[in-house]
Amino acid sequence: MKVIILENIKGFAQKYEIKEVKDGYARNFLFPRKLARPADESALKELNKQKSEWEKKEKETREKLAEIAKEIEKDKLVFELKTGEKGEAFGSVSKEDIKKRIQDKGNFEIILKHPIKSLGEHEVEVDLSKGIRAKLKISVKPEN
Image (cartoon, rainbow, N blue to C red; front, side):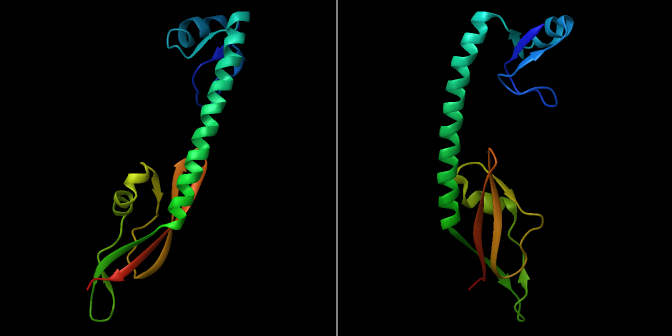
């Protein structure tokens, strides 16, 4: 049976893909969960319309995220940490600290393996989703 996939199914199919599946799998799993519908002629016409609308929205979303990425790359966040007599930093700058500062731009994932524990300039990668990433400049200075 040919079906139109309505949602991304990890390891199986992408949204709006047409797949050939066994009748039982379609009737017992895909259709009840509204993950697919039969690929008849009217459904295929509707699919083309939905697919073009979805692609248009996807393009707009990517453009918006690219603009936000440019804004993030222009910004420079400054954090202050307490320091000792020899200039060693007490404390650190974590993902959560950075996320709070860029929260107004959106809820994005900060890619940081370890908290920043040293003074100076640092670059942190921000994943905006849809494969778009930005480099955020962070400056860690001693507290006055």
